[in-house]
Length: 180
Image (cartoon, rainbow, N blue to C red; front, side, top):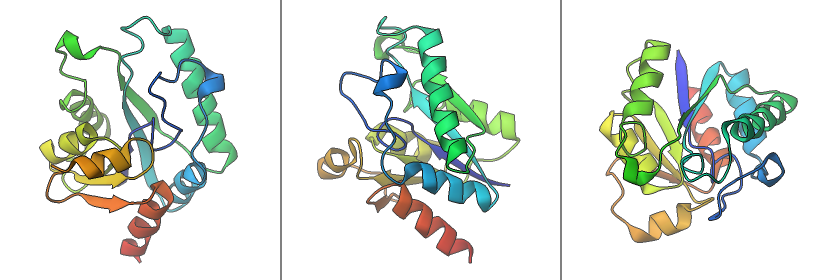
């Protein structure tokens, strides 16, 4: 089974320092929906792992997060793709949970759900914590320069096996080229 794990904000949709608090604020990064569709057509299972501390902070409610994700699923489907599941951490950083990236809780859930060792599985993110959790589970960290990606790259300290791409489209181009 070919599995890929994507962060949401800054990878699939435009990032906001003020959080994505409504479906209207969720806007796809150009090319991201088509990139997911290409993965789907090539037999990849696409899942999302995202920190959503806006829930704990009271910035939005669960119904709103569900509506945001419904919009994302619909947009991906309209492009011809599929996101199989969204795994999210609802906690704030001070709650010391096991599921907030860079901790591995969400990734343990993903591995269990799909019965798959995550060694070598591509994990696409725009922040250091996305790359760190990938490294922690022996997955393959892929940094995109969208969202916070350029700042993350400039700050340095990336896991040594990190591969850097302009955006999700370029990352998918490379993944699919490696298969052929």
